[in-house]
Length: 107
Image (tube, rainbow, N blue to C red):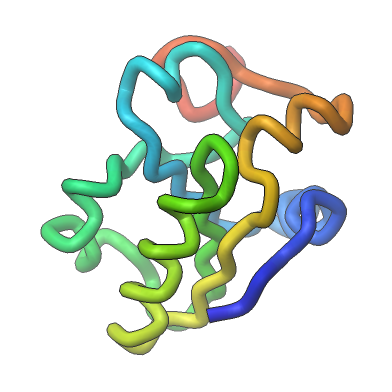
């Protein structure tokens, strides 16, 4: 598992990074990184087959605690997993765009 900064995530997103948001649906609806796929922490182990093992997976939560645990889980499962330090809270504080609602990206 690798630690990644908000700036690294922003650059990776521009290249089509796979971003997994492990927060709960209510948190995700309130605001998430554009394109982030909602995969709550409790569901991630049963949904791991949905992820492409050949691409890095960027894992984000509110502040970094849940994402660190889930990135570690994914790394042990053979993924190139990165936890985003500071999480969605830092993403928003840094002035990056946010999507609200259940859609991964804006309409």
